[in-house]
Image (cartoon, rainbow, N blue to C red):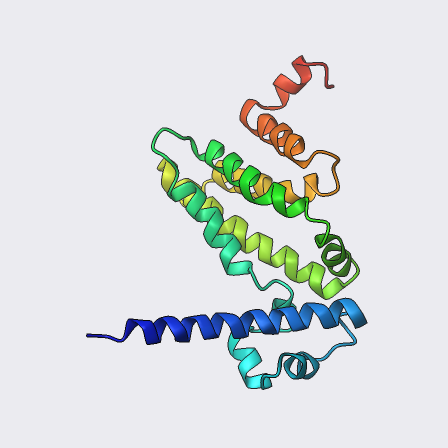
Amino acid sequence: MPDSPTVGRRERKKAATRQAIADAALELFLEHGFERVSVRDVAERADVSTTTLFAHFPSKEALVFDREEEVEAALTAAVRERPKDQSVIEALRAHALESWVRTVSDPRLREFHTLVDRTPALRDYAERMWMRHAAALGAVIAEEVGREADDLACSALARFVLEIPTLVHGRHDPRAAVETVFDLLIHGWRSQCDSGLR
């Protein structure tokens, strides 16, 4: 019989080490700026070797976006694991309201966004990351609605949905902003024009 508690401890230890590295990196980057901090500096702050650091993160930029895999997994799960009577777009709306509204409303993220906005390498990495997420989400949407993996409408929907956190960031009422964008996606621009928006 396998020793599952040992495996559980090992996984928890790996996760704790990864989190410690990510936390140390963000602290240093916020204190000194991304360019002025080396990978060795991060490893020393986290009390790990650079080899261990690179076992968890493939690049310096990845240290900032330590939840990249979780974010993509949650997005695709929102579509794949939705209730049978829920449409793909309504499932994505529910995910955005549950996950993204809380995130964009967190005042602690202001410094994080400032760091990314002021660092070209991080802006480029974030753009590539969101494009990967968009490709993965578009493929899952296509699979769920029975279309080809590169279906243009599914790819476009994925791209639009992934712009929502950026669009609602800094809005007075992020929840209302998310609802507005999804209403636009669901009902189209024509309904906006009919309600007086030209």
